[in-house]
Length: 193
Image 1 (cartoon, rainbow, N blue to C red):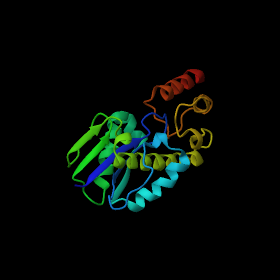
Image 2: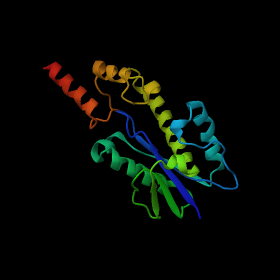
Image 3: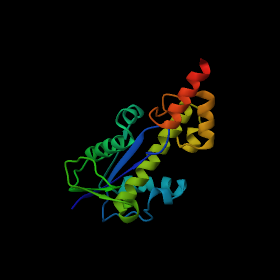
Image 4: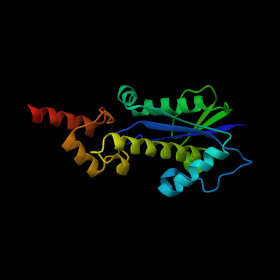
């Protein structure tokens, strides 16, 4: 039975897309050291990601962009990214195991596991691919919008990011439906008047 592990990265940040990955691991080619990406260092994730891509039966990464996040909300944008990742797999899975408490609508049976990235290697592998792909995207955004420090904080609401938002206002990569960004926009409008 081919099981796709599915996870996302980037639900909480104020900027950038939400990224999901789906991975069907090959039992004949195990990847040692798989765990929830949040428990791994950046170096460990960067070392594991190419091994996962090389040894998996199939893998895919997909996004829901900032406009979709603002239109749908972050939960449904995450579901959309996960659905896209599963649909992009080169091999159709028999089932999908999703990290979290709900599943996107898929063509195959899906099962949600709270803390699934700590329970199932395929979900952990998806967690690592989603996180490394999103981090790379935020480094690209950092080059496009250098005032915000995206390469350091990856879009999360750190004091440095909030300070940059207050100084420069939001850029096109910011999620305007998120309260700290919306409040900054409102303050900038009031300040101009």
